[in-house]
Length: 352
Figure (cartoon, rainbow, N blue to C red):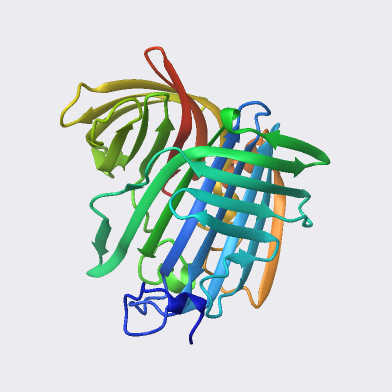
């Protein structure tokens, strides 16, 4: 069926834009943002995905503050209009492609809301090569992916308090991906093909923004304990150097009582001396609150009817709660390289 997007010269198939080239039920397209305000200590996340072959659009919003994480998950039937990227009280608008977004969460039963603008600080980085993996002689993963760091400004209300976020104290990162992956659509879409599938028993996705450069990489640890690496980039801000492809990252990750507290990383590129960066944990957004890998039977891309809304508040000081929600953790970190101090996201994900 035709929609307003079909008037743009962007078609990639013989059909209208509400259809994709692959009939796999796990085909998805998604974005997420993670934001941290140093002035208040507040962390915030928002994501939205479409699953055309499941007729689902869903999204999530998270605010973490003072030892509590507030979660909202929303879903609706996708329909046909890709230009409408709103689900219930969750709204998104692309103000300037690859540069500016408007993010809004209206008042809702979970008791938090916000109105924010993201502005990029550097070009997006496309992971190269794209993810492709077979398992049991079938395609498990075939997806494109890019990320970008920036600043954010606006207002957040939670628990009856309102915080003003300013660009000079508010770090933000966004992530975009699309294609097929094994952890989408719930067990009915993927579990029967890839039970227990997970890309790495200990994965690490990192985006750091320092005064002179932006760093992004994706790596991990294989089942046999050896280091894996999927790609990375360093963008310099202070001169006209071309972006440097990262060739490898060595990681020494620090834990106290089995909880992540920081890391020392050595970033290798083809043309420059290694970057020796230390990171220190400031906060964490637990992405299980957005139904990554599922939570209480709720999975991203799972049909939930014409409209659906749910959520909860987690006590992040309760060890039983932490055991339940652990698995895909976006740690907000302070990073240091010599005299340079920056901020970013150090994501760790585990076999669940």
